[in-house]
Image 1 (cartoon, one colour):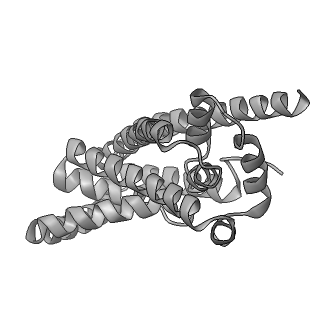
Image 2 (image 1 turned 120 degrees about the vertical axis):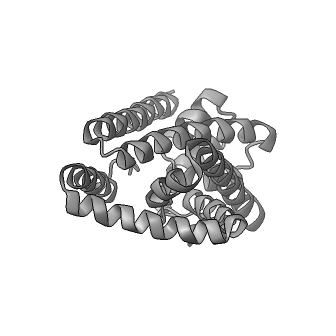
Length: 223
């Protein structure tokens, strides 16, 4: 059993996001409603700047640990309030923290705890493959192809060296944060075309990484 990044749930979310951006970019009513929400969020963030940043950082970390939760909807608010650079740093830091927390969770608490968090069949498949000494390029493919908590839990459980896992996580999360910032800016600019292009790049990258990873796993199994 494989664990394709474009499962039914993810495809539905991508389509919903694209339809929302198209709706906002073409409808003044929807755009005004979004602006009102952003303005309300900005007033709260301005009143509690440190608390707002801390909350954003925590939610970004949870997004990297829990597949059913995503901080993507918060990115336009962050860009609107703090600008793209600060928001990207918060996303990057939070995602890295979440990835390390998932790694620590699996490495410390073991298989019984992890089984309650992730699907069993794909987890065992990846666990068996990464139990060996995988190349760092393969680990990076794993992190790009499946941005959810699965890579962190698998690599923590097989005790992949933290000194090698940390830079890979930092690199992968930087890439994800950059793409999310571009999506957030396109949303605020009411640019449906730009949003669609960046979203297509994101999807193409994850699918390419997933296919490369599956080929490596198949070759290792055949060998």
